[in-house]
Length: 161
Image 1 (tube, rainbow, N blue to C red):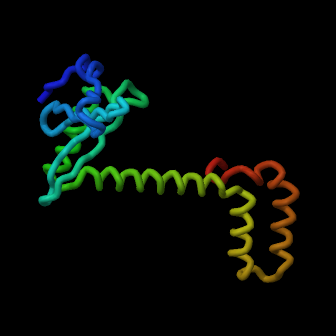
Image 2 (image 1 turned 180 degrees about the vertical axis):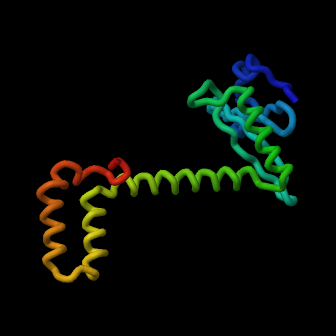
């Protein structure tokens, strides 16, 4: 492992004489520097799982926060190989992780969108059948409208202490 150096990664260019296909330069342990004909560079891990050849992109070459330096590419490849050693597909694990992050963000956005006013209306509607008469619901609504909604009505419930 470790055939490439940071200086080499920076210096490597695509050779137009080799055609338009991306060129791959091995670092070892199936980690490759891929250079496209347009000059863009990225990290690629090649592996076989359950008899199927796979290629996993590890990010564009460059400096953080947008790029991935050589040392980080090696760390990412090692983490993927650890998953492979457990019989898990690193691409599927990354997709699962992405879906979980998206679901969490969506839930947080939904919680943020639920204002005190909206939740209060839902609570009144849920409790209304148990109250003796319609007047109780009207009292709750008018009290909240007069005293609470002007202050915290549009505040997300998650922010109310």
